[in-house]
Length: 580
Image (cartoon, rainbow, N blue to C red; front, top):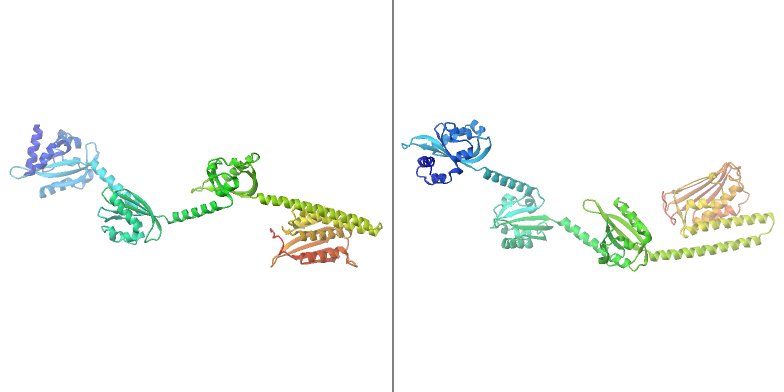
């Protein structure tokens, strides 16, 4: 042992008296400690190697200098060094843990002890300061404290109920959400035995899971209905290093409801007679229900992951690319009719609806398709079209026969010729009305089309026509067509169409009521002065009696001097509704 170490040992023994263990400990690890002696005013009288290593100054630099140099300026300004010496003088020693300062200006955390230095007479002649650098320990402790603080902040902010138990089942921590869930203040729970009341609170299944984790030291996660909340909860239980448990309770009622809704939806989709499938944005098939199996002939395992184009005939491949482009833009493709191909290669007529599929963030990730087999309906429609065309052909043959009979029946006189021409014109008007209805498969016709067909032989600019969209039944369309033909024929002979300046306004509207009513007006102007006829001809009777009867309403002709006026009013209870 060096002379300096022997001197330090002697001084240490003088300082600590019968406490022999501490000086020996100091000397055994002397380089780990800064051991500094000073006089009564705190001026350095001895400085060991540990002091040089820890504080940075050499003994030569510090001898005679105040120990204040390795205190922080704040502590020096507050009188901490002098206060420490007074405490040691009065009590026999002083301990502290504080920040100190190295020669470089760097601060470090140290624990220290200041002990009076005595002569053999017992007189105090100075002090010995022993310091140990605990900066890393301090930082570790601070980091742990900060980590604990952050952990507590997180546990207080989460939506899960959380609590911790020690190995004796006592609560050591309860967060705010757990207080709310259980209706118990955490101060009333900390230190209490979990087994006292909480098995009844959390329920038997979660409690048994607690016991299993406490016994087996393996984490467990279960789902159960909370006995106190009457809601579905997910309970996650973890063993802790100290032998206790940490437990999370999460309310999963919304998720359970969503899962149940998904199960019901999946059951509906699976049991649907329609083919319901989904594709991703590349066109690959992602799901396939039993309806799709029945319609297309493929099993799900045969088509999942395959391109949707396996269902398209070669001449319709471009159709899918157009649909996917619309889906990428968020459009929904409303029901449309197309052709698809079954597994055996046979075509099938389908009605398709395609909708975008979005993920939880609202991004479009694919499309759902609903296909309905319309082969039977299309065959029925084709048969109906065939029958309608055949019926129309036969009706035309009957009209041609009637026309031929009329030519043979009427004489060759002027009156007979005029009557024959009027009769043939009425047959032609009826024939054109039949053509209009045939184009609509005898399902009815738009009022505007009926008007346009009846007035086709005349100059369009002589008419002002307007009114809302209105669908008429076949019988009403025929009756109104004949009535308009008679009005136009009369106007061409005697009224507004008999000169170059006359005009005709045709307007209709829908009057509200129960049921609503159609009100149609024919108003002539600009023609020769009008006077009432001495007798009503066939045309007037056809309009006022025949049309009124067919419409279950009223039709009236007024012979106003400025122009003939006709007004038709009829209920719409049995007619198609309007698009205003």
